[in-house]
Length: 116
Image 1 (cartoon, one colour):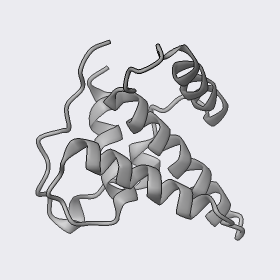
Image 2: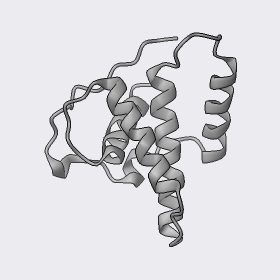
Image 3: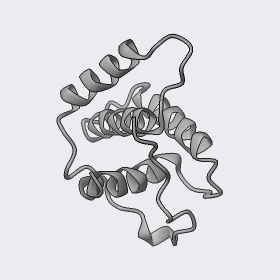
Image 4: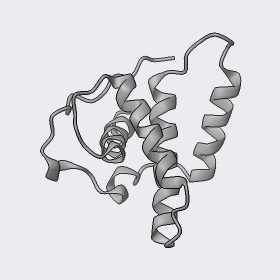
């Protein structure tokens, strides 16, 4: 599996965060992403760590689920779960960015999607 690195944009200006619509414009369906993350986790050999792509895509799909709940007026626990997954990605990236973790996921996802 190719090692993916965080984008070089670790000190962006607050106004430079992509909107969810922009960040996820190239994203597969939520169902497809759930399937990809589940299959990737299931296929992982015991004792090996999941890579950055897994954590980025998992955080992004959870963010998208949370956004759908927020738009429907019933975020439930999705917002908290999405934020925790985003923090996991930030920890993995050892980033110095101080921001809403979900904004960081969107920025990193758009960078990743454009370079596929």
